[in-house]
Image: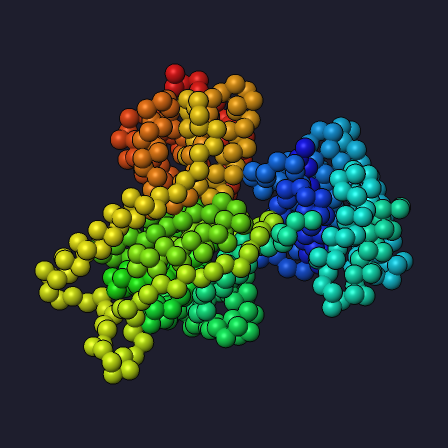
Length: 176
Length: 353
């Protein structure tokens, strides 16, 4: 079983970080994983994306060109990658920032107002973790326990308060 | 959870170099390899090493020349345009028979080119980007783990043969993260009686130089060096064979291209095409013997490259052009898809019976 996840949004939304967490979550479950960012001259406000592969087999090409799971955190990302998503794939949309619905009928679409929920939690930068939590719930890709455990590898121990906030955001998305 | 951590390829190179006993790094930032310099800048001061951002790539490689002459493990890293700037220094290091590691995380060219991944420095790396009769040991990792393992291996080989080594990666491998295990290794201290570290008045001084105005002497020196190159060709070839047992067609690719190719090979097998893959891990010495042997049973070869076709020349040479060899490629920072490689395999299976 191989899952190819594409996470895309504006630079600054924590798209690369969410991907890194996800890769660690796969690692936590002893899966084969890879994480590949788009890299370029973009910075905050530009577009950012990363491809994560979680597989039972060794990962061949790390390039995610046909995602089985798409997380779109802004409209340009949905516009660009909706058509690339495989038939039967799953698309997760931050509905606070994206007004339109997924047009494809051959994929499962999930909507979560991640940015609004993050603001309500008082951690406006953690919409990425909220949408990640929702994705984990709906796909069963990894367990919430693995995801929580993985977070400890990604957020340094020196920043315990951030760790707590990240886990809370993850749970909020998971339980939404 | 395993004892593995997620690291970027660039970071894995840097940490592996430190584990291999490298305490001297000289470089100049350039995308997509800057994480190597950044990692060294953070780590080296803490372990009593040297990190120095030189004023240019030319300067950095000459600092490498100096430390290599003193007999210490030393490295530099850059990406394609920066590696071009280093060529004069690399030729001098080769001419002075010094060990050193040069890392090239390739990007599209020529000229300033772009910043996306490429393999178009194959000629430069394997055929001598600088002047004169010389070779580099050239290794091509295909995973983050290999970025680390081959860094360590390169230092060892370079010391053993007194030949500079180049680790030839690309922007994808530099930027991607994968699980990597970096155990502590025992650094093999190599005797370096030739090193220029001061005589303490106890022996005649050593000379490290690449200037030989007497042509007979220069010829002899080159002859002697080529004897070592012959040893390397005999002993140090590395490659991977994938699904080659009963293969009728053979994909040849290295680095990131080999991973894309593997996906295509697996898919082609599902469709009933007997195809395998040979992945050169050392680009010099090139795995000629395994390709020549494959040519006895394989009907045709496909060279998959992120260039306009450079390694394909070595594939043809290795098999004495005894079988058709076609190119499947993208260039300029574009990456072929597994579908494109699969298409190429299917075409060959149709046309070469």
